[in-house]
Image (cartoon, rainbow, N blue to C red; front, side):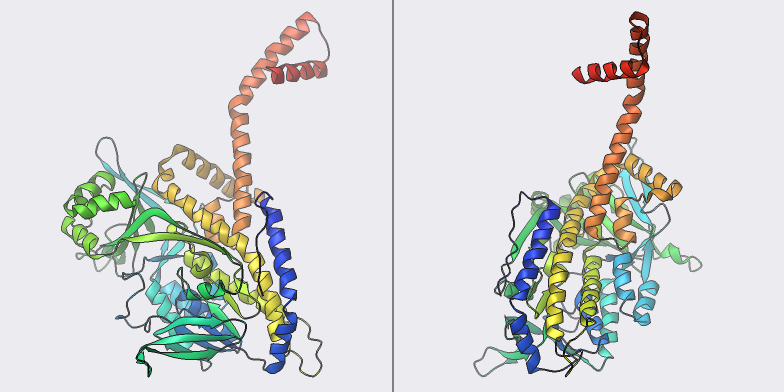
Length: 549
């Protein structure tokens, strides 16, 4: 099957979305006969699910599948991620993750209390941003900006800890198997076969041993440089867009307070543990996210040209920080700044959009494999976990559809039903994934620059005031809709744009209303004294004259 998702770019987004859905649905029907034939070969209620990628998204997808009784095999390029010696793909510690309602809701639907207990016991609530800077007088300042007028928080979570808990839960399930150090090298999604190279195991030819794996359904959750997506492109006409932004990132660390007061648990933190700390630098920034041990995982985001200058002479790094990120050198020793900059890689940031996300009834991609985004909205993992919840809710809906085969009710149409579900999933999720991808890029400007803007602060104040004091309007900030709710990302964008237009009209009326009223008063007085006439006629003449001018 070849799925074409091309459509005229001149169409409005709503109509383009409709064209995508219609074309995907029409093309999927062409393969019902093939899918039905495959189903006839295997009259089994339980399917074999192969999940490629054992990160948080892949692990949660495996958990959802296993809870539904399917036989699940998890294949991971790296070694066991629970082993501290396993090298991360980016050769550095992971940026601490921000977990919000969408991710928590996805884990809630996994029906694993052990997982939720871990989330709320091993995370740190962050109620807002803490903006750091220096006043013209030279005085350092910290300015808190709460995320939500209603006091809701996001959570700082250690990626490795969350991943370990998910894998431990999966390890206890009898229908789940792990295959670490397995690299996907080939896939035939028509015949439902995949091939993996096994690390450190050589075959008779001297090359790494390759194993063949049969499956009913493959879930690709193997990151931005997804091997599943690469092979999926051979079976469907995938629209694909990849872009690197002109920013590199490097990791640093603020160490825990060694002189902490045993009576005060928070004294182990050298700055507030309940905030995401930002040092905005207009074109770049430095951030710090708290960890349970009292340290902060810090990240420098800097254009490539600036990185190159500092790489040429890293001794200038402390002076650069003092100029652009005042106060950081009192938290991280200058020698440690230089050492971390030299030792830790300077990594790129990539944004990926593609469509569709599936082929026939046999494969789908989730998370970064489908929509890698920059980290500035803290939604990368949350969106990936939400992918899992939405995918399985659609699969469940179609699996519960009536089966008209009296000989084998509930089993014979498993692939057919999954095929229809995948069409719906791709059509539904594409708009939302593209929306949060764009929002993440926009939020970089907000974090490094707009947080200091009076216009940004005014709009935030007005929206929060309306949300708190006139709740019947349903008014919320864009950030609160994204981070504290489960609305579709595309709907959040639409509502935010509408709110922006309403606020703009209100401000224009507020600013120019008195001027227009005064002008009309003078016109009415003059017109009545000269010619008389009704008020309606005067208003009509005034409006005509106003527009002519």
